[in-house]
Amino acid sequence: MDQRDTAPDSWEQEDDVEATIDGQLDSEFASLNVNAKPFVPNVNAVEFVPTFVVKAHSENLDSVVAVEKISTMEVSESAAPVENGDSEITTEEPWDQKEVEEEPGGGSYGDRGPSVAATTEETTPETMEEEEETPAPKVPPTQPDAPKKEHINVVFIGHVDAGKSTIGGQIMYLTGMVDKRTLEKYEREAKEKNRETWYLSWALDTNQEERDKGKTVEVGRAYFETEKKHFTILDAPGHKSFVPNMIGGASQADLAVLVISARKGEFETGFEKGGQTREHAMLAKTAGVKHLIVLVNKMDDPTVNWSLERYEECKEKLVPFLKKVGFNPKKDIYFMPCSGLTGSNLKEPTDLCSWYTGLPFISHLDSLPHFKRSSDGPVRLPIVDKYKDMGTVILGKLESGSISKAQQLVMMPNRHVVELLSLLSDDVETDDAGPGENLKLRLKGIEEEEILPGFILCNAENLCHSGRTFDAQIVIIEHKSIICPGYNAVLHIHTCIEEVQLTALICLVDKKTGDKSKTRPRFVKQDQVCIARLRTAGTICLETFKDFPQMGRFTLRDEGKTIAIGKVLKLVAERD
Image (cartoon, rainbow, N blue to C red; front, top):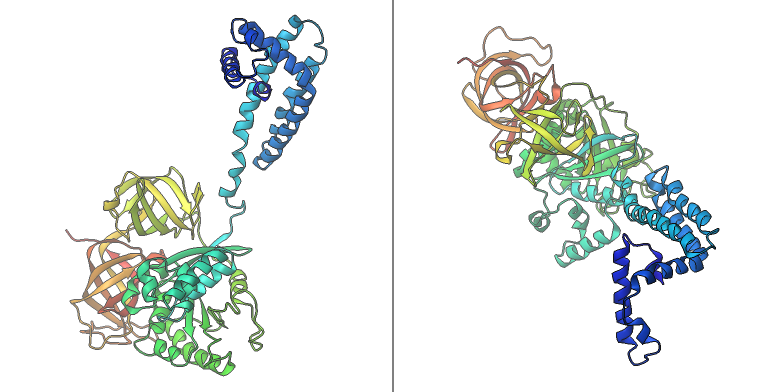
């Protein structure tokens, strides 16, 4: 009976179906042989079927209507999230019509004929509609919530083994980005390697080498949301061999979290001359990070045990240094104790630490003021990384301007015209993106080999400047001997890394007064400020610091150490 309740697409089909069913019945009940003979010859089947279906309809109509009504109700309910206003009405209407048509149809077969035709014509769209509607509710989750949350990129910096990745993993767990099962799996795997305290960092250190050594190498990316904001975690490596990677991470950040370890001896090694605490804080400042949160981690360690004295000691040593780098201790720096391994004071305040009265870490991030960004400025997207995946995919942070799908952009400095095929903001597909968002873009019109990290996507109306020679103000931070014209170093500017030569020293700048010397210096040494002319090995994209700060600051590195920080004052045209 059920076979015939749903109307077929055409009557010929139904005919065949009937035949096969009868054949099956015959083979199955051959032993019974009750009324088999009259049924076997399928001569009258054509006339037979319609009358049979009509009878079925007239007898079963009430039950069918009831069933179908329930099913349409279900369909309309499941379709509700699609917010398809008409869906409820359309699904129910045809059945009401059928009821009206069918009930007076108590007359002869002739009367009923058309009503059957009507039912088939009407049920076919009905069943079609049902089929289309069921998968529909999958659509809403891909759209991010309507008012876009402010995007903030947080970079975790600090000495190796201060606990940056562990804090990142813990935050992702506390905000529900990593589920408990995954963490338990990491915990088991870490235990097998006798590394049970490392399991949280595995949420961010995903490749095997990083896990085996317990050291971050590449900048890990993850994201989490609070009530008001959407954060991207950039987990920078602390080891001094990987500082170039860390600079790339810091250049995308709006906010830096300097993680220091309060454990006896660890804080000191991180802070002494060879330690990364000082270098990272300085690099973060030159990368344009305005706000710094200092997390004093490992407060649960037996040597510390949440002691206020140790916390204050770390604070006293750090403040003068951060001040020297250029952070204002009253406005830009915020200290807080925490424990990455236990998660104390990251999301919820802890009882162990009664002397700390401020907000826990995640709540503090939520309460930060808004960052000012120009969405109507020129499009500037420095490229951090690129790879092949069904076309050319690039990663980067949109520094200014806004972009949308199918837009034509220009890739500088090679002036390739490219088209955006799709945009992913933190792995969620969108049609347009504003400044500050971390994006994955799929491009058309350029090969992956033609792109290098440090290239910049611009809009055609307003291209960024590119060149090789520029004048810059430089602060020499750490260098054993003197620096003369002809000195070579590695330049890190936004996401670009290029070899550079100091071609001429123009003048010295007095640190206190800002006065420039009348004579050209023959050399500069540590702690001096000078204006110099630099020339890169290849053409790079850059802007003056005044016009576009994110693309006008740089660091100079040599022999694995940061030698100097500086800002671009003016671009010098090439002499042919």
